[in-house]
Structure formats: C-alpha cells, structure tokens
Length: 383
Image (cartoon, rainbow, N blue to C red):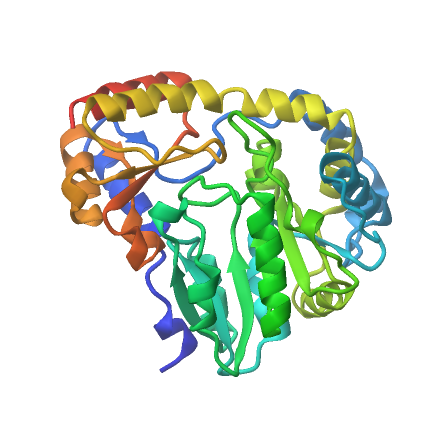
C-alpha cells in the first residue's frame, strides 16, 4: 500500500465540503469549524508590507534558513517573551508556516519503520507527516481527568527500540489545555531518558484569553544538552494565516537537519514577508498582539454560557481560540455535528477527527465576526 493510501481523510476538507453544500442550498451557515482568524492583519503591518514589496532585493530567491534579520528578531522575541536564549545562526529556522516545519521534521529524522508518539486527540498533521515519511504513528491518550496532559509513566510502555519522536502541542489544539512548567520539565527529562526528540507545536503560545502566559518548552531545557525543537507561527499572533510564516527553534543538530530537508524542497519565504515578520516580532509588536487577542475572551464567554445553558459541558481553558465541549450524552461526534449542521446551519468540528480519544467531544472555533458568534450562541442555546 502506498503512503498516500495510508492517510486518513483530511477532516477539515470534508467539513468544508459539507459547509459549501449547505450554503449552496441557500442556508445562512455560521462556520465555526476551522481556526482561521476573521480579522485582517494589523494595518501597520500592511503598510510595512507595501514598503517591503517595492524593494527589488526581495524579488529574488530568499535565503533557505531565513534572513539574518528575521532570525535575530526571532531570537530577541524569545528572549523578551520567554527568557529563552537561542543562537540565531544555528538554532533558528524560518518556515513557510509552522505546519510546513511540523510536516518536514519526520523526513529529516526518520528511517522507514521508525515510530513516532503522537497525541490523541491531536492535530492530524503529526500522524499524516509521520506516514508520509515512512514512519509509524503510535497514538497516546490525553485524558480529560489529567487536564489533557499525557501520563508520562504510562507512555513509557509505548516506547519501542525504534521510537524516535514525541510530539506535544501546548497550548493544545483542539482542547485549549495548557502545560504547566513542571510538566514540560518532566517531558524534557522523559525524552532524554528514552532517547527521544521532544517536539512542541507552540502555534498557540500567544493566544491567551486570560491568566498567566504559557511557558515555552525551550524555557525549561538546555538546547546544548537536550534534543528538543519547538514550532511557532505568526498566523495566530497577527492574523497572518495566509501569509505563511513561522519558525522553528531548537537544538542545533535538529535545526540543521530540518534545514537540509527544506533546501531540497523549497526556496524560502518571500523576503518581503520576512521583513514584516521581523518588525512584528519586535517590541512594538507586543501591543499589536494584545489587540489581536482581545476579541477572543468575550467571544469564548458568550459561547461557553450558551453551551452551558444548553446543558453541554465545556472543558475550562484559558488559551487558544477554540472551545472543546462534550457531545450531549457522550455520543457519536460526527453524527452530532451533522445534526447541528442540518438543524441549525452551524458548522462544528467532530472530536473524532482528532483521534479516537476525541470521540464524544466537539470543537468550536471563535474565529468568526462578533455578530456571527452571537448568532451561533443563539443557535447553540437551541441544541
């Protein structure tokens, strides 16, 4: 069987097809399925892009690893926001969005038949990328009773002689769970003990609704001594999903190997986008980020109240722009989401799309205009 044939259907494509069919039938569909910010990129960044795109130097091939200016801006950002010191020359790689880096890492590190530990529920790309690289995904459960953190002691029993990677994702998609620093330290030690590369998908690290800012995996480890890599994205930070810009930071050997894969596959991020990213990650970007995130807290409170009025349990989370809620009665999540689409013209994401452990749950995205969120809340009350 070819590797493509082994891939499960990409859930979000199926959801989009169902949404389009309902809209074509003339229904007023409120789409809370995919997490794509509804607000535009901040005006000051658009102005920076307009200036950068006129610079002839940006019209040529970009540096594979990213411009020196952007890599230094990334290093400065990590120091300012997380107290993390990274070598901009050896420990940072610019990416065409964090998804690209997450998908290419297994190509850099796996041989055919190697195993990868992937969270369940979890972002489907971890499993898909493992399969495309010839690896074998080994799901491990995230238990709601543990705040959707893995049981590391239990996870040790899933490790075999060919287990190479451990994927984590905190703050977590789809649940919104946050990993406390003590857990992150334990995860780093766990990887060291078992010879694993520990990977954290930190795309939602800055998407904080309230409470203390989550910690980066990089902040609890030594890049010189432990094999870790963390992936970051500007998509959520600055409403830049379509721009495709992110970065990886981690141990120099992992960054080097990821960069070697990229040299064979792409020619780097458009230079003008890199120039804007460098500006956004500077100190002046902190206020922009705060403004971007300000909309999600009120939206979550409105949606959560509507769900609770309908008797639906919600996992308490203070990060990401998702709401993770139980299917009434713990039933079939796909059947539930189909029914909601048919009866309420409301698009939700079934938990089964994130793995077997996601069954009995559904995810709701807060990335729709306020008026549409209010309309969705009214429909949720009728469930």
